[in-house]
Length: 398
Image 1: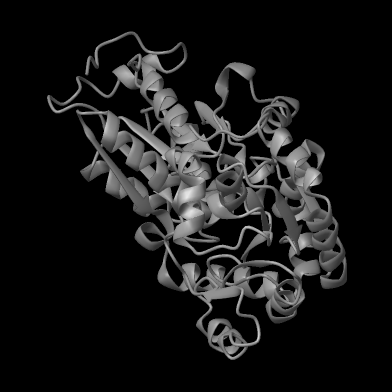
Image 2 (image 1 turned 180 degrees about the vertical axis):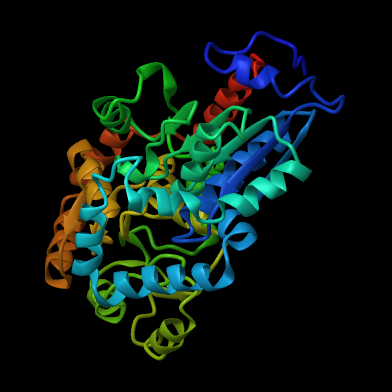
């Protein structure tokens, strides 16, 4: 890989100040976080593409909170996020909306930017990098602050993992924003980010598009009946969907077949297994790694509105029914998908039953949604993000 090519305007001086490239190629670091699961998934999707397509240099993914933020703070933040979403969603929504207008120089934003910053800087003194990519807003803020104080000189990029703009993602030291849609691009521009700093790549996901050509074979593999609609229900990796047992009975009691994914909520999986004999057409499953296959063989997905899950569904041309999204970013994701025609919305289990009955009685509605999905799906998002990272390094990808 030619790493001496001319860099993009605005990144050249900072990059050259790092000195000559190592013989082995550029050093790239992706900073992730496990909150919600989506940030880690996006980071791993980029990592996988890079390892398969770039034959020089070094790329690593680090969990920013686990590596650089104190365990007490990390644990408190994780518990606070999970419990507020599960037990006090209205309070979480108020917090999300209250922080949506934080200024970069506000005391609250400066405190957030300080989390793990000095520990991370110490890491950089021992492990210098040529490009750093943040897929979570906290490390993005830390990078920006290090840039402002003159202690960081390499280019930085931020991957926004939702279909919505929030102030937490916006930092003046960011060289490039990789975003999921034109809607996010316009939101950044409206908040003062120059258009030339934004690329619409889609939210990075790891997806096997070849599965779409094997749909009928996969339906046979999973022994699905051709006379019943197939419904996939996903409660989230951490099982954070509200009222999951009522949700299960509402879906499984209808003339449908499908899969109910409990994620890592072992207690929910154990409880629902007690009903397995009553609903033989519905398979109750824990956390599994065959979600792309299940998406491929399903007719509709019932889920929250996480950016990564919905992006994976769109890549597999799967219509969505959004149920009980997390207040805040997932409300905005829901609205985007609804406006795009890719999703329907059910606010409670009664509404969900009605929506399911409607789409099952009128398959043409699902066909219309699949057609709408063609306009917004971005199955190559990880590759597009990787290519933009190469350009930021000064290398024109092949």
